[in-house]
Every structure is written in structure tokens, then in C-alpha cells.
Image (cartoon, rainbow over all chains, first blue to last red; front, side, top):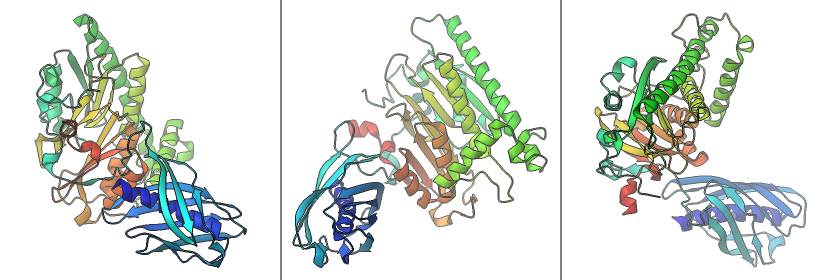
Length: 188
Length: 283
């Protein structure tokens, strides 16, 4: 789960790096299985953009933005998007060089995320999460999405064990027969 | 940090003799303020503190109700609904809350709206949460550290039911299938979430309209509870998810630091990790 999320974030940043570095050359693909990335940026040595990722297999989603600095040589505006099943990226003729590029650390609600991309012969060969921890420096729970849950998996509770009762707004008449009324009576 | 749930431990929950509450009726529902007596406080002093705090909260609710209620023909909101008062001529309170509601409409991509299908400005979806927020600010200004305010099932807390401890307030959530039982409970105050709001329909299949987004019946929810740092976020998102369905649920959990428990029309549950049985996780 965390790995997939990390890869998703990394690829989002990678797509942006590719855009910046590509400098106007044709972008073919930049994707991994179950991942869709999209990015847009203005080049000129620096590319920045917003990438959103969605891991289709489990349906988790998160959004963040990332930006990266690449060895851009042109000054054009480029964008890339697409879906595919490959975990590598094929680059155009002007991007046959290799190198390792670190993206900018990005603050997300899940913590700081920073990725590093290694490119050899125009192909992304490695994506590493340089930084993927929360404020307490623990592993990041990247998804806070709502997932199906059995009733036995939520905290069981009885009205005698809680201090207050939440629920859809009741009328003052409905209050009279509500659990909250019983609690208030007990606390009077 | 102590475990968030000790359902069977005596001396907590309503068995705690130090917890006292007062109720009053406002905005068509019942508001309840519960405050634990601080250790060493004389019973009489604690009772007077609660009475004084409840009086402040009641005045605040009633003042806002006189401005915003569409059930009062003499309210500012009613004058606007009749077309006698333009928004730009309305009070600062009215305009401020309208702007806030409009911002939430944008943020929720139309799922939350402050306008009825007939175009009448209806801030009912945010007024109660606004009153709870203002009341909370007043309670803090009064110097109260530990309190629980429940307005018709929407809850805002501060501190702990056990003064000078880290024990969270435990809020039960009514089971929409059976109002006399609890579906679960959520610890409030932990991880900065002090507010819990619930939106729901009493009848299956009820339609909620919002900006032309009728929730599809098969993906609709019967009850949605949202825990957040503040009551406005919790209340607006609970309403928005009820209206917008699964799409708005995904939007809410990705954009805001909230916990959500949604009861689907078929009785199934969707929950963020915060609603999982924390006691089981800790063991």
C-alpha cells in the first residue's frame, strides 16, 4: 500500500521531471500499472506542476503537488498525461542522457514527500522515495479514504459508556425519546 | 497517550458523578452543555459555573436564531426569502455567513449549497454549526477548559470529561437502523479532532438536492458522520457527502483531515481508519 502510494507520488513527480527535461521533445509515456499521472509545466531548466494520483486496485486517492528541477535546455511549455502498464518511460531523442534527479520536497497532508528519479539512456530506471514520513517521523499512512467496514470492526459502544451522543439532527420532540435525553437526565 | 476506549471501566462515561449537563431548546432542537466539575470544586460552585455557561450559550443561540430562522416571520432571513431585503443590505452577520457558505459550495464542488432549488438563500445548513462555533469561542473566553456541547446531535468538545487528564470525550453515534442503539463511538479531542457532525435522513431513499446533483440512489448514504478539527468543516462536509454521494466522500477524505463514517442505504458501512476499532488496534 505504502509502496504503491510512494510509486504513485514518485511517478507524478517523474512525469513533471520528464516534462522539464524533455524541452519540447515528444513525450511518449510515463506510467506504471494501475497508475494514471498527469502533469503540466513550463520548462526552461525548471518544471513545476501538479500531479494527482489514483491507485486503481484499491481505489485510494490522494492529491498533492510536486515540482522538480531538471537539466532543461529549451524553453517551451509542455504537458504529458496518459495511462499505461509500463513502469518505464520512453523519452525522445533529446533525452538520451542519464542522471539522477531529486524532486522538491512537497508538503502534503500526509507529511513531506520527496522523490528521486534515475534515468539511464532515456529510460527511468529507478524511483526512490527520499522522504516519506509524517511530522512524528513515523511511516506515512498515505490514504485516509473511507473503506468498507463491517459493523464488528467499529468500536462497539453502549450509551452508558459515552459522554454524549451524535446523530442526524433531531427535533425538540424527537429529543424527548433520544439517547441524548437519557444521558442528559443522568447528568442532571 | 492512554487507550482511547475503555468501555467497561467504571468511573467513566455517564457513571461519572462529576459530569453535569444543562439543556435548552433553540433552533428547533435541543442543545446540551456538559461540564465536569474540576477536582476540589465545591458542588455549589460547579453548579453555578455550569448554569452561567449554559445561559451564555443559550443567549447566543437565540440571538442567531432570531436573525437566521426561516421559521420566524420577523427574522432577517425571512425578510430576504420574501424579497424584502437584498443580501447587500443585510447585516454583517448574514453577509459573512453567506460568503462562508458560498466558499464551501466551491470547495465541495457544488455538493454543499446555501441556496434552495427555488433560489432562496437558505443558510440553515450552516447556521447551527456557526452557533456551535460561536458558543465554543464563548466558553473558552469564559475560561472553561473542559466541556461538551451537543446541539441536536452535532458535537463540539474541548478538554476532557476527566479534568487534567488526556482522556478524550467519547461520543456515541446513533444507529440509523435503530435510534435506541449506538452504531459506534468516536473519541473526540484525540488527534486534534474536536467536532463531530452527522447528516442523515430518517427515511430510506429520501432525496437531498444540491446544485443539481441528486445523489444516485444506489450510491446514496443514509447517514454520514464527519469528525474534524472544527464544527463548520465537520457539519458542511457531512451535509455535502449526504448530497454528493461517493464522489464527494472521496473528495472530502482527500482534501481535508477528517474522519468519516458513512452508512449506505443498504446498511453497509464506509469508514476512514479513525472509525476503526482503535481498542483492537492498540492491543
